[in-house]
Amino acid sequence: MTMAAFSETDRIFFSDGYRLATHALLKGKSWDALENMYLTLYEQTDLLTDSFIRRCLREGKRVDCHSGCSWCCYQAVFVSGGEILYLGNYLTGHMEKRTVREITEKARQKCQLTVKMKIPELLRHRSPCPLLQEKCCVVYPVRPLACRIYFSSSESSCHRQYRRLQNTGSFPELYAFPLRAGRMMHEGINARLCEEGIINTEWLLESMLVDVLTNPGIIPAWISGKEVFYSPALEEKERKLLNNRNQA
Image 1 (cartoon, rainbow, N blue to C red):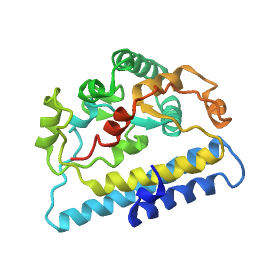
Image 2: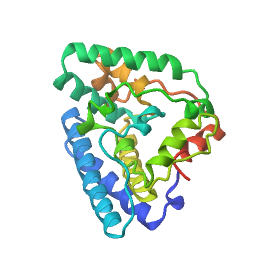
Image 3: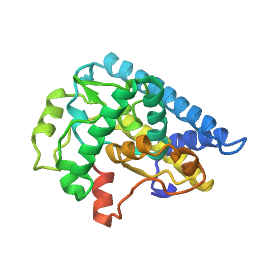
């Protein structure tokens, strides 16, 4: 994606992400600084989406997302390297070792199902996120950006998408603004990290989670610029399909 393809609003959120990463890198590349960067990103995103939801309610528009609704937790979830490292640190720091082992095994099992799928098949596939437990996310405070910006105006449309496994063109009735704003902030962060030689790979949550939870040296390797996460070579049509996956 080039800057020429951005709207003025896109540029604003891209610049916000770029500045956030620049501030984190002022004193060099360190995990503490980058971890704080993701914390700030999530805080800013939550403030933005909270404001957006309040506006929807004032205008009489529905936001059907609520605790216990997990239709979106069965589809493919894509995260970046930095996000999954941040999430992995939370898991190992806040969960019992037994729970972490169970999550690792669930992620491994899902990865075995999805790792060889082509993008059309992957977008049709439905199986629970390894972080889902009794219809609730066990890492909700540090859930990825993709989950934070996903807001539906119709729970029934999410249910329809969940059931229409053969139709990749079936989308829930999502609000475009939070999706686009969050994505642009993330693009800005990625652009700045790339300038510092950090490869912020984006791929399936389950695949990257296994990498994080089974490789204790992954953080310094990632910061040093090594490609520590699996990322498949995609055809151009597959990339376009991924880019359009949340557009109705």
